[in-house]
Amino acid sequence: MNAPADRILFQLKTRGPAETLALAGALDISRQAVLQHLERLVAGGLVDHLDERRGVGRPRRIWALTPAAQARFPDTHAQLTLEMLDAVRAEFGEAGVQRMIVRREQATAKAYVQAMASAESLEARVARLAEIRTAEGYMADWTPDPGGGFLFVENHCPICAAAAACQGFCRAELQVFREALGPGVSVERTDHILAGARRCAYRITS
Image (cartoon, rainbow, N blue to C red; front, top):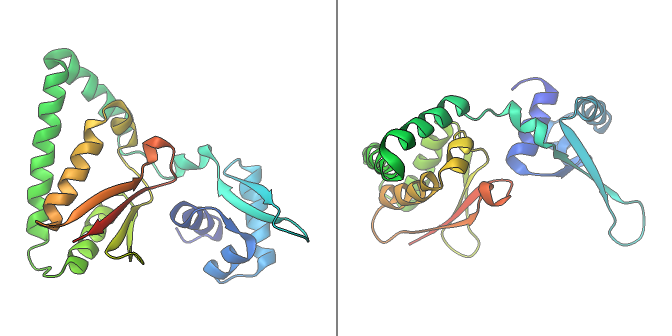
């Protein structure tokens, strides 16, 4: 994403709603230039705003993505995945779907554990996990948590349609993280896209 408009969409996707000046600073362009791009995005139905009043003075204008903008960050093979889930459910029942999810979970966990082999500290493993998940389309990031441990964030879910149709995918994801990050590590989901949050977030502690 190199065009300023695409960079604005990416910034709002990964960092959440923002004011004009914050977007200008993040993109290193002028406030006026940001406003011009925002106007085009609003006209295209990709961005909307709300005016937030705090005390006296002019209200603060906060920009955010619209639901239509999510199509710019695609759900990987969504229709095909849903059709395959329906086919497995029709042939083997709900138990068959769960067996498929468990097999996928085991294969993914094995691959992640192997990728973590050279990461000795928890911080290094969290960073490696973010790299892996970003490569898979989850737009992952992490930061130290002021309360201790780390905050791991996935700003996008490329299998959202499948996860919405079968909650087992989300349960399996949490278990994969716990296995990949090693024994004695706690992984707690604090935000969930399927529950209406902007992102999926996890608190990781040891």
